[in-house]
Amino acid sequence: MRRLLMLSVFMLTLAACASSHLLTGQPRPPIDPSQVRIYFSAPPGGYEEIARLQTGSGAFTYGEQNKMDSVMAKLRAEAAKLGANGVLFTGTDDGYGGSSVGVGAGGGRIGGSSFSSGGIGVSISPSQKYAYGLAIYVANPPPQQQSVPLPPPMPAPQVE
Image 1 (cartoon, rainbow, N blue to C red):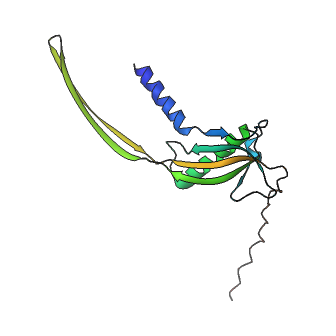
Image 2 (cartoon, rainbow, N blue to C red; image 1 turned 180 degrees about the horizontal axis):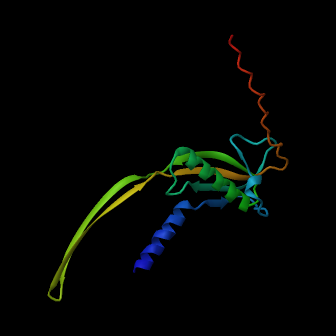
Image 3 (cartoon, helix red, strand yellow; image 1 turned 120 degrees about the horizontal axis):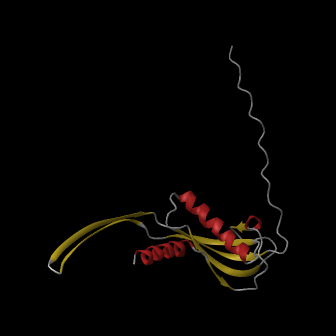
């Protein structure tokens, strides 16, 4: 019974972290997730839609930046599995989470012996972040913009 309970908890944890997609176009051979670009507006030159994506940050991800980093990485990974070289980001939602406390008690009698038990359960889990996007293929993506190096800092003025 205990193994079944542990397996159930494990499967629920995996399901909470899973990404999903709905195919709306033709998938391509998988690529490396590092080759997938995130577009926050329409990519230049148009695109071919491959799938609609949905993912969550996971039940044990704390901090807003960590949640966003998690969902962006998962969107890239799911798109890469489908051969998409881009994700047209469509938005995020915050899931439910928070703290809860449960209390239980029980008792009974078996073969002349009685027993009683009690328990308290505490759950402190953060709310999840969900992200949505379109897995897309861009035929001729523009080159990645390289950041321009900053000039060296000016020397401090000398005081006499």
